[in-house]
Image (cartoon, helix red, strand yellow):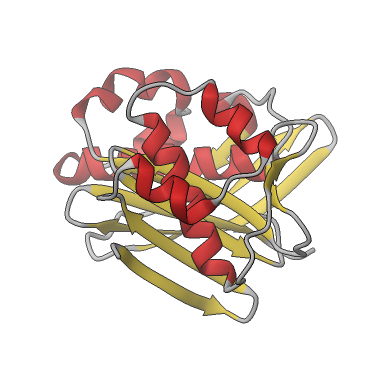
Length: 215
């Protein structure tokens, strides 16, 4: 099985990544999807179907359960695992799936590192974030910023956030071996702060996850 890793970061915090090499029939046989999940899958076309299946299989593997809990969404579309106290966040990109489960609010993002992200940078990054990037690691640093904003958007969980206006990542120095940074969601009277971790997987994917700081 292509489970790249399942790590216990701290008590109550788990991180996993799955490289999707299986075909759809393998996942369908292993997962035994619930009716609501089958309805969701029926609306998905192309390669995204495998990624949808792969990330749900990863969450089940991480849960350690014999009988799989239904993978559901709340009224805002934020995923959760039935009969679980853990917050769940998922991500998938070009044959890779990632998930984080923790007792605190969280978000995860995995993205294949591609040049096209440069074209959207100024639409989603504020000047302070862009100013912290140095030319030698511009693309990698940009993917951390993008991934971090995706994580905080997922953790907020209610959509209707402007990446540039409402999600801010504190300036940091990018480290090729992986590192940490911090950020916040600020909208109206709400402020949520997060600790963020990033690293490259398989030499081609930026993995980022965020955990909400306790007050």
